[in-house]
Length: 101
Length: 319
Image 1: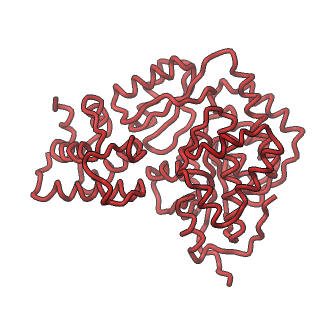
Image 2 (image 1 turned 135 degrees about the horizontal axis):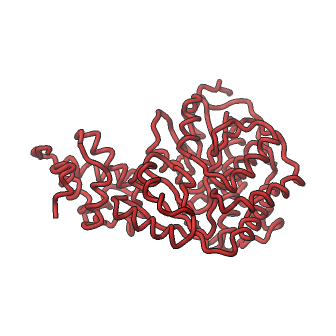
Image 3 (image 1 turned 90 degrees about the vertical axis):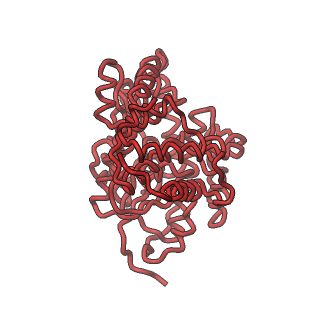
């Protein structure tokens, strides 16, 4: 399991915000944690997959997409804030995410 | 001033069902009036629901045939624009029915012929599949091997396309596609859903449609392409009118593989793709395809036209 470093959540937040701003062509200042990815940004699941790939590379994570998929079925993430929180869980637990309730 | 071509470029054409940006007409309008003139020509040639085409800015068409006409119209307009700005493409490839626009781009068919071919293929497909309820599902987040195992218990289901390393399409009887989609979610697919298409394109259920469509093609004049089209079925280079007829026929009933098609182009030296059509569905698929390349779309057409080093002396042919 990866150790969560000080400032890591801010780093994750910055990457997530920049990603959605660029992909959805929305100014950063119009985004907030409550923005719904599908409804408000017309985003799609491939965006989430791409974000996961970004974080897998950045933090050298040992996580299978299937593990995340199974977790998401139980704990859907629909807003930017929820995606940030889930990303932090993925970084912290990697494939042991499957053991979380 | 002319510049020597420095890059290999491929024009790629999306299929119907893609999500539009919503402002394609304004973007295209900055460069030419091709979209409007092609709309007029299409309206004179086929039964076109111009009201729907003008109002459905996001591409949410209810009617599959109108949706196909629309994406073809946008794609041909985009093709005209890049030719007007003397952007030469070395290869073309069409995702599913995007093949018709690819053939327009390579000057194998003219605009009206493309409309006729889309209409004919649609009629043959509808006729051949009218007796049963079929469907298509998309599964993302599982690899092809996982999906193959998952659908192995359904004899009718097949993988009809590999979009990229993380996304495949399956087709077969509607009830089994729905079951497989549900199973995929249980097995950890981050996205699995049933698409609103009624026909099992690119599957064995299309054999009869392909046969009758091929007969129709016998009476159609197809010209050799101005540059190679890459087949999405087996990634061979299609360079003659006879090859084109075979590829159009196979495109109805055989599985396609977009990942292999893009990879083959990249391995051939292509580092610039131009997604000639509405939206950016192929750009999105390409995120999960390995290689160093750029995909330009309608939203980045200004950058494409403003970039130096990819211009040549190719005449604009906008038949």
